[in-house]
Length: 169
Image (cartoon, rainbow, N blue to C red; front, top):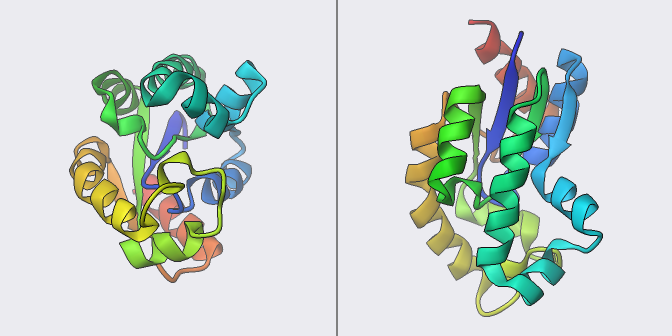
């Protein structure tokens, strides 16, 4: 399959894990926007949120996605909030195939509840926050998605195979 593949979805949906394997299967380069931002700044995402706030982080994310989406033959795992910015939605929709990795809030909570590298889940009730984020972002993921793949309860190999099957249709 020629072209770029962009993975969107909430934190814990499996974008990075699925993306790495999918890229290997399809002989594409894999990138993760959060990892790229950390590599470029030399600090982790929670530190960027602490110093620059979410607005500063989103500005960095727009730049990273703009650059990475213009590359050829990549699988890109975006951050969970990448779809909040119209610029990102436009770039993703026009520069490749967008796969929305979807999981229910309970599954996402189980996967993220002990992860200290998720700034938006560090204060208050993480499950309630995930419910709020799902409500806000699900319509945006759907808007940008070429395909929706449910990841809840499935092994990674099954999810990757499902994506590969969608891409050859």
